[in-house]
Length: 80
Image 1 (cartoon, rainbow, N blue to C red):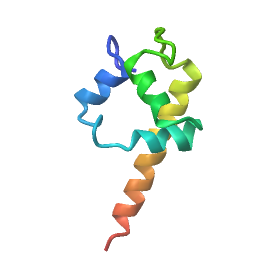
Image 2: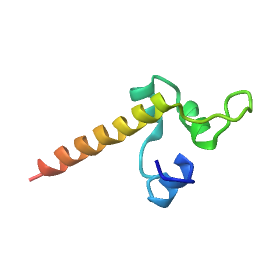
Image 3: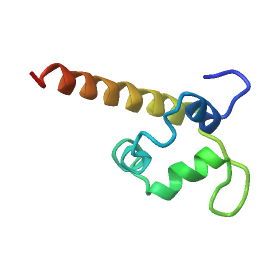
């Protein structure tokens, strides 16, 4: 994890926050609605209480990004 930064801040700094379809990641890898992942990014749950990704969710998040990057790379390699 990026030390001292939230996931949202790190994604913003990496210019990825508006590039990736987070709703699709939320549904495909977590089985939740798009609102769920945005609430996690913003650190506030459905009741307005502070929340964050659990260690297990962070691992799933990491694996989802690695899977997405592999699928993009494979697609790009097969364009021509």
